[in-house]
Length: 185
Image 1 (cartoon, rainbow, N blue to C red):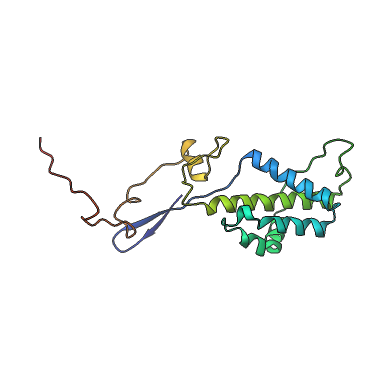
Image 2: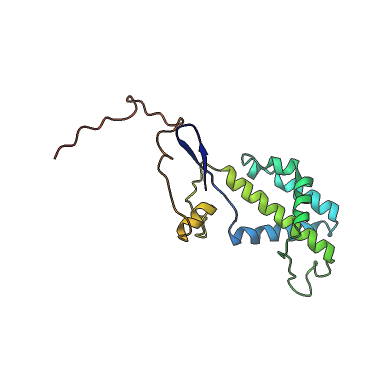
């Protein structure tokens, strides 16, 4: 996505990168983590939510900026709950599954907590930017950003003129740029 701001004499363009999904394998790991927490905490909703909140700010995520999600956990959870998503991440693994008798309300909490962990993963991925470029792929081969997904699906026009030069953030003085000679026929 390119954001355009018109000034008196020019248009300034800025590349905005949108990270909107994570690989299925990562979602499966999140579901497994939430299942384990539900089993470990005997489905006590208060303890389950606290365990998920505590898991958000871990050493693994220390530099990913997700401490904001830990600090605003209750607000984020309330917003996810308001969305009333029709996505269902919960399923039982058979008759012996310790979560087979989970109530409908607890299944909703389960699904909301999976969504929170997905947000955590997206936040961590977006926090890697600009170290992760807008045209990179996840390990499963899917595009890492919405921008690149639209480009490879031929649903976007790519206009990069003036993104890489003639901007205040780019130093164009002659000391840093080699001079071109005159081309003669």
